[in-house]
Length: 411
Image 1 (cartoon, one colour):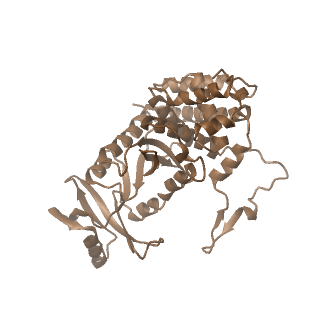
Image 2 (cartoon, one colour):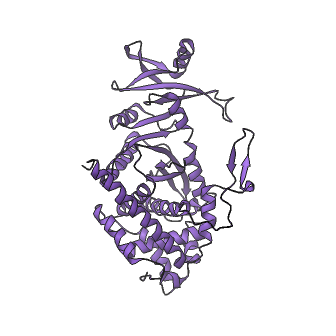
Image 3 (tube, one colour):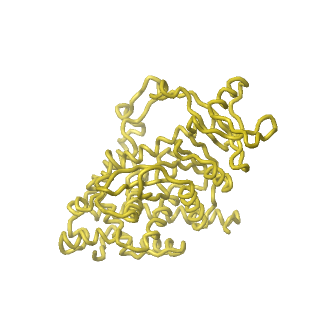
């Protein structure tokens, strides 16, 4: 793919971005950045991750290639690199530096999505950021390459990747809180989270049992089923009970009445947390479904993720990096100047009022972003938006780093 230059792009900004990446221990050339940019443009315009469909959507004059065949080969290049961790780490940087504003705590959500590619099982375990606007966006992930749940060590490795990569940014490291569904359980896993000072709230299966810390006494080697703990809480009118994990970490088990569609099948939901305020933990867990919304956008309502036609776990990991950047571009919330005749308030027809009296927008941030990005139509018009996002990220990183220096928090 030949070098692309337009009157609306900013080589200086690109150079600044490359320096930012290099200063963080990575290296991406301008050509690599442009390849990612044009791949992101093609995915957003075709609303597909199928490279053939992406290729059909991009004009050769936009990519600088001589033919559709050579353009297709160029689009494949990001998936053919051996050192693909640079790209994954770069997408991590972009997400963190775009959304993090120096808050003392950051919320994370964990879940999996899977599908079949012929005989190959694609099973992506993802940990991502829940933004202040309650939008989920991925930070780290791993294609497990097999059907079923992940083991504790794989999850711990992803958490450690977040901690190390965040520290590499030379900005303050917040307190992390993570929530997940009942497949992400295990005393070793939860103990390791506590060791890393990470707060968690995880849904429990009702057949699990724990050693307890009751009335100031550790009930060693005597385990109580979650349902028995539930009965004890009802009898004593307590909101939670302390349990002991791996003879080391203290956590709390609490129960919430199920108000979902499956309440008849499961009238109560059981949780474990190391957050002192169990009401706060329960409220946090209610945001877990945001990751399911994200997966839905990647699949049926966004980019046809299951139409990805490349075999290999590392290629799926690379795709997730590119999609993270695409998703960032879609939900980019840079405010546009309002015209004098434009009403400040949202028109009533854009909102829906439900039985609880609350008003909700009819169109999600993602759907609004997709509509806006589809109007771009050409790569020449896409690049200024891409560069503007990089400029915002660069500015935020310098701001965060200066604050960290003043607070003497850089290791």
